[in-house]
Image (cartoon, rainbow, N blue to C red; front, top):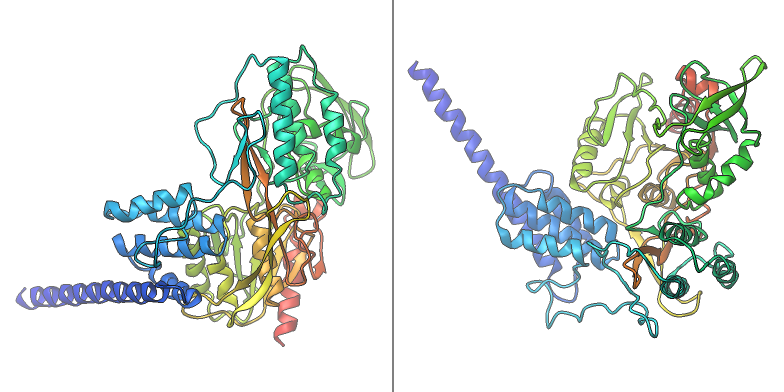
Length: 547
């Protein structure tokens, strides 16, 4: 008993000493990072490297300040979405003192580009709105997302006209993609002005404003505090599109192609749904979205659907539309993967490492999950990163930085800064190494037309850095970078894309997307049988490159 107790005390002492050493190490690195960020000449890449090492193991105030400094670095680089993720992570830290948490809360409301103990002089003045308020109107724009506003009701004809003109003008002064998308905004004004009617209801007016914003065909521009309600749908008959054709993907008719809906060809039916669907940045993304709502219509009405079976038989059936909807069934995750909340990983039967990132909609938790996955696959001869069906979230340069060994330019950031549609501030975008080590062996990146926003950014960074072979289909193509919020006199809040991001060759990702090096599609039979030709081709590609 004496020996066992002595051993226990000794073991506890070793554990305590190790914990103290780890805490001291994290504190020391935090102080080093702080010194690198002090003054006018900051070494932000080296500070980021130290801070990313800290967030993997630190706790309490040390972790809070590491998150805040990472958000500060991203805000100074105009990576607002990534900065927000770090501030959110800081607020989740348990046992932290109020001071740091208060700064993190400020970071959620506005970019932090000045911290008293890091920056000399007085803080810069608050950023002015990119445009001045419209004459004779209380409309304005702001970088910060307003909260607590509700669109007014019982608007007069004069008030509807005032709010319409305000929104049109604020979009005209701030939107970034008029030239890229060949939008004749003056023509749009004339067309929508003719739709304003003296007896228009509030719902009709806000629906019209919803459709006005959708003229931008922009995934990142929307009515922020008004939601259009989709029509009712047919339960238990989910539809998706394969090679441009809609198919039933579950239930008794799985594998049957939809030939017509209520006598309309699928393409025409999709177009009729556009007034109810939020804007998308590319035709391929719109078709994906619209195909999944192909059977939508007025609740309680009958719907006639003509289908073609896999062996060529054609049948027409009638159903009743109800308010219930069914989402697209998720494909099963392979059994060899270790599942986490956002990032799943494991060794493919070929011996190649495989990591699937389902979403970037989170902060430090995603980074920690990815680090765990990459560490487990450190010795894998090649790696497959799968971001298919990942709609985005927050940028994570600390993840893409795990695959580069030197700072490399990966594109340009454009931000609208003047009244002309072509007035932009331009800044080079770089990707720097992150983590204590980098994966240098061959990497394949799997993408499809749902891959968008932060996922489009992730794909662009790795492609522009020359670190991946991309396989699949062209990504969604929505990467606006930054946005402003228009606040109208009626209380309606509208998000407006105010910038865009290009690749290393200065090619916009918005609309164009990331085009894969090797085009591979999935057909309906692949989907139903669980075969994955994109993954199969990726295994072949990286094994060949590794020879």
